[in-house]
Length: 67
Image 1 (tube, one colour):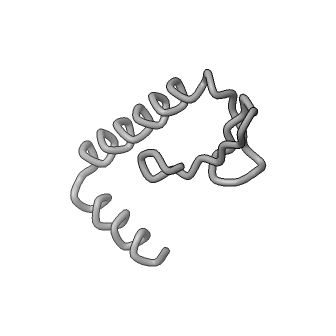
Image 2 (cartoon, one colour):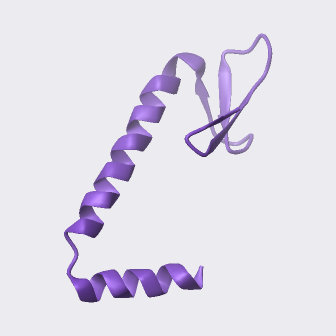
């Protein structure tokens, strides 16, 4: 399943959820907390970018265009 552009792999009769690949997993009961944590990371990043001066925003945009 895909939630907020993150791929989760879930198997029948299992309490584990794999995130993006089979190497990172969480318990089903931790899914809500994980999604909230991801939201907080996004909010922090947005605030950090908003606080940058124009020169640093341009540098960031250039770096992102190369990837």
